[in-house]
Image 1 (cartoon, one colour):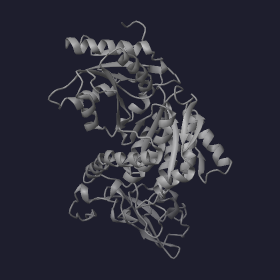
Image 2 (cartoon, helix red, strand yellow):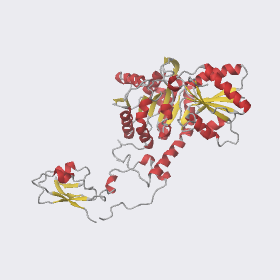
Image 3 (cartoon, helix red, strand yellow):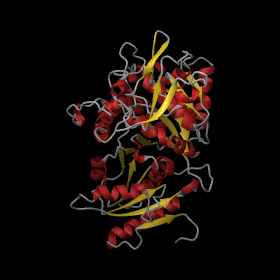
Image 4 (cartoon, one colour):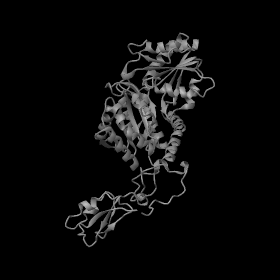
Length: 103
Length: 392
């Protein structure tokens, strides 16, 4: 897996910091990739997908990528491999398969 | 100036009314129930503009306060004893996020055994949470302290606890001088935090995960903000004196001129001890009283200055550390005095747990014993449990 850690900047002294760990911008979690400790990986098949969006709404992170109301794939930078998407995918479609992550 | 009769709880609720906070979230608990009960009447009667949140526990009450304070509001609550214990986790979160919330607290013992009366074990158990602590000696001081503490809190970005002694102050009617509503409003000013969550044009991230690389720096900066509290407090207390004529130093000295020994204590007992000092002074005894009013941050230099001139000091602690080494005021005061070239002898009297009354005779005994210690230079008993059956 590629290294998804945020590139380190110079670490600041305590005098330079805003009080109380305040970060003066929003949505900074996008910079903190959390998908690097997955042991199982969901693989999505576009041809089998019936676009019910069950996987999108049940994903505990926001790892199901959707564009214009349609699933377009899985965001592996944030997916932790919990398998809920594969579990919830309707049996007749079975569009998401969990496979073992390999180095 | 208006003179009215109020109990400690009524006085604190009245100060809250005059402050007119944006949000009060609370859960009732004896003996502090009245504070928010009376305040909720002010809300129902339209005398304040406050959003009152009746929470399902103290943990939730302070959590709601944290949310409201992050949003940018002026926020207050009230609790006691087990309530403060249940808030314990959120105390750290409020302080770590620099949220200037003020708690009107009534000091009550912690269970078990269950008891609703006064000692200081609740707030003493929260000393390390990063909240300012003010121990009031009477209702007047509780009223004044709420107003002063709010301004210090908002100036420094540090939350504050203002406390009274359960029942002794909270439920006893006292003569009170109060300010006009407009005077209080002018004194505290409008609360305009630099950063707040409802500043929707500038979204921010509050309370993120902070690991090995930055947690320590943020804590260091919190400790620094705390270290600046005392200077700000002294300035604001002087401003308040100009307005009200009443001045409250962090550490109060009472008839210490020429005194060779002193009692160092807090809360309502200090007012009782003042009576004893007056009586014994008339008999020519060289004794005085030092009262600790602010215990967080620790007014270190003030304590050194006040206590270094005595031959011996008896601390009276209304809680115990379970360290088999006396109470917290004793232990911390000993630590402070250690740096002095010439230190007074110091002993501890743990007293009044669970509301056990402290009598004039108890305080006279402490003065007699500490005078003997000063004379002989010998301490036979560093820690005494005062007024408990089965002890000498």
